[in-house]
Amino acid sequence: MYAIFVDGGRQYRVEPGMELDVDYRDIAAGENLKFETVLAVGAEDGLKLGAPTLDGVSVSASVLGMSQDKKIYIQKFRRRKHSKKRTGHRQKNTRIRIEEIAGV
Image 1 (cartoon, helix red, strand yellow):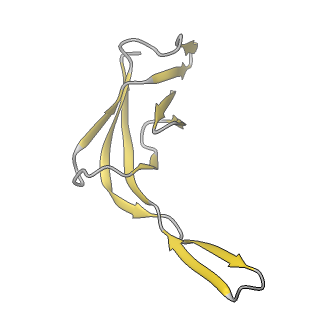
Image 2 (image 1 turned 135 degrees about the vertical axis):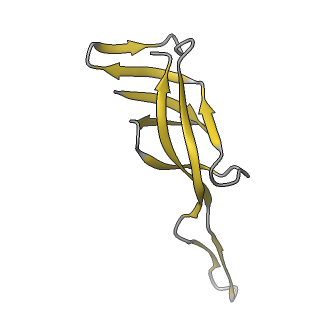
């Protein structure tokens, strides 16, 4: 069984027991999250599609902790001006584990 849900403008295809990174939330490790904007659910009996979402279906997950992406470097260079600038950014994420897909 799998589900497709929306979080932070992105769509995720998940199955129970799967671990993934979502946008950062200030939540302690061990707490639970519930995603209620489920677009589709697939099982042995077929695929259920929402229009646009499925009513009464949710995906619950537990928070494992915080993680970070690789550092991205941004460079600005102005030719013939002896001017350059280099900055970096490292995105924070929340690592979650999918526990169950409820309401199917």
